[in-house]
Length: 373
Image (tube, rainbow, N blue to C red; front, top):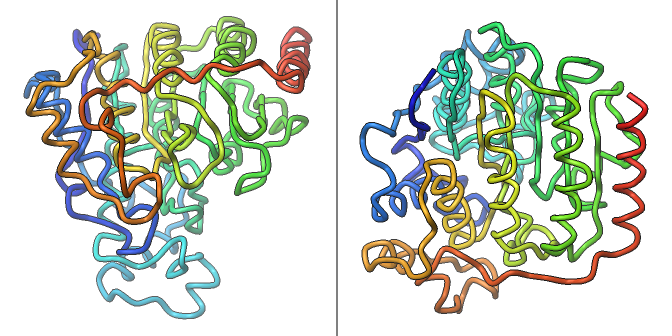
């Protein structure tokens, strides 16, 4: 069993973007790497350079023709109209850009490697992962490949059978549900914004009995998330007794994110990580959505701090503040004039609020379903 948690990362994310206008033009993984090093949290012994998944390794779930088209589109920087329609490539959401194969294949390679390294137990963090919308033969929702699916399949190849997948991204993990629908050895839980793209994951949608979906209303606050954690997520995992946990920790559910309408602080995400990190003998934590560079970098760095046993400081050292002050974001009014605490601390102010009756009702509905299993 591995002694210390490992961080899987790569320099490919430092200068690679989806384009000057795309939500994923912002630096994310490189910011987490830089902040973690500035805090002294990421020694060389904890860092693993992510391999790039070879095309054949992707065929375990992705269609070989699609992988081939993705490779060719990186080489030529073009896409035919037929392939655009068939594979959803070269669209505003899923553009062709210089690293259109190498970047997602690196994230996928990290998750495939994590499954192998976790064979005998341990904890791994792959913040570049979490691309939960990718479909077998098409790109979907900024996701060209589906590394959570590949991670779970990698764990299965190591003999790990009962796997729990928890997703707290603002968007529903439609690709993961497709992959493991009806699988009694995979329990999937998703908390996501009601009505937000891809508009799947309704309360009554069970993916053949394998999924518990909780679509939440706009403005979800920290106290509501705490109730969801205590009354749904934890009981569902304790009941399932997983051999491994895959946690997708998308940062787009925080209030400052421009792509969703939830109102969590990063404290809510960290509370979930603390509660779940030791619930199974094997834990893989992934990134996911998140489109405000300051909120993503601060949240995901805090996740690594929790996993690696560090206290989150009240005030960041100067080197870490410099990392945050170098960031820029011209795509949202909340990012043009960032508040000072985005530079000086990782922690948001908690966002407390009343727990709405509809959330209590829907959590009770899912908890009752859990008791019937």
